[in-house]
Amino acid sequence: MSPLTIFGLFAVTAMLVCYALEEKSPWFVLAFAGACALGSIYGFLQGAWPFGVVEAIWALIALRRWWRVSSAGRPRRRAALKARTWFSSPLKRTTPLHRKDRD
Image 1 (cartoon, one colour):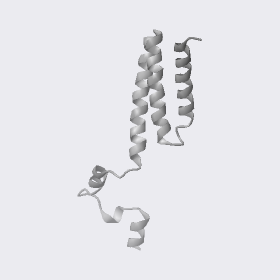
Image 2 (image 1 turned 90 degrees about the horizontal axis):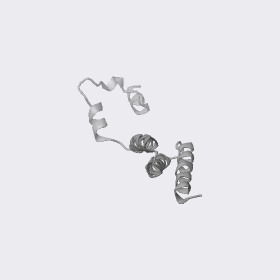
Image 3 (image 1 turned 180 degrees about the horizontal axis):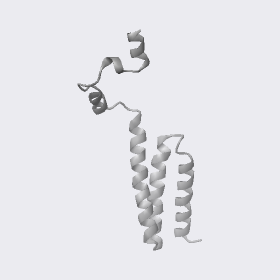
Image 4 (image 1 turned 180 degrees about the vertical axis):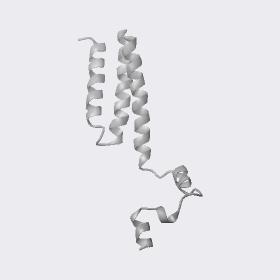
């Protein structure tokens, strides 16, 4: 086996493992994006540029998904400000805290 084949095997195996473990942690989504980038590099080095392009696109999609998943747990100021619009009514809030206040 050539070093390039070993590199490709590593990249594809890492993609498979990280994809299978994505629901465990957002870090596996980021690792999947990195493995897709490695797969893209492998595709270009091997001479299969369509494979390299597709893997690069998958890496960007996975990176965007990681950004969304990792920032979903953090409070966002913009979301908090958006919730305080002129048409939001305190009576329409349905969180348990506000239900206690109304009862």
